[in-house]
Length: 262
Ligand code: NAP
Image (cartoon, rainbow, N blue to C red; front, side, top):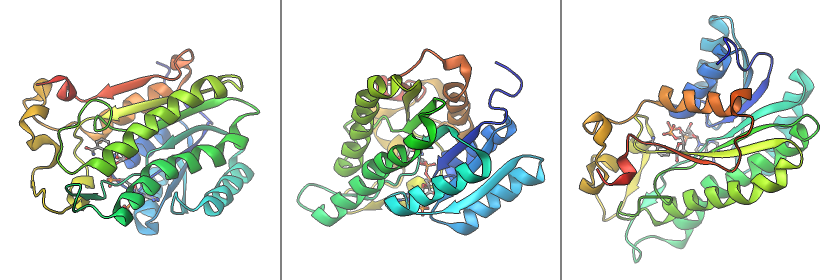
């Protein structure tokens, strides 16, 4: 791995104000990238941007909901005007939403989770594509072990469906975007220590310990300790870099074997 594998590369990361997205933003900036931080909370994004700039990096906050296609397209336009073509895009923004049994989960709540996690990913990739296709690049989608290997978290129907959909999107786009020298890969984390778990709305499936609590989803590698956002960021940095130049359409689980029956 080079010292600055992302030097002078324009990178756009959604959900960059918190958790995994924040760790990726800090990592990418450390690796020399110009980082566009996208998310809903201006305060969170500005705090990350300031932290990056204070340590000599390059970053700017752009506020948008990833489900807002015109808003996201406008951000891409501004990023390109400022730093040039986008070389790396990470569709990371996502939320657990409402977890509830089938008869309790409302259609509106199901739609909202699909909209946030799956349609939001589609929109992110779609608006970035014109800004990447001239020069090629790397797209990374943050999916989950839920919906790809784990189906035992009660009430996670909408979340798991959205995460499964993201992987299908990555696999169908890989051959298409390969013609433009764009690689696209999915990262599937297991339980990672971020604020996402506190935001889960549980209705009839109360489980205060989140993904780790299910005895079928223990984490053998760490004696059940969740992973760190920085560990996921290091995987993203590899996928974003030239060291991954023949890797596309891959689905990489990062979970300490949580999803393999610990
Ligand atoms: P997090 O700390 O809550 O960060 C997610 C960020 O995405 C938040 O800043 C959130 O903003 C933002 N976001 C959500 N919906 C958005 C939207 N529609 N538009 C713009 N921003 C939006 O959670 P995280 O754990 O880092 O999650 C990052 C990704 O990893 C998600 O896709 C998640 O599904 C995936 N993941 C996480 C874990 C885990 O255990 N942590 C495991 C597997 C997969 P708000 O605060 O406003 O919602």
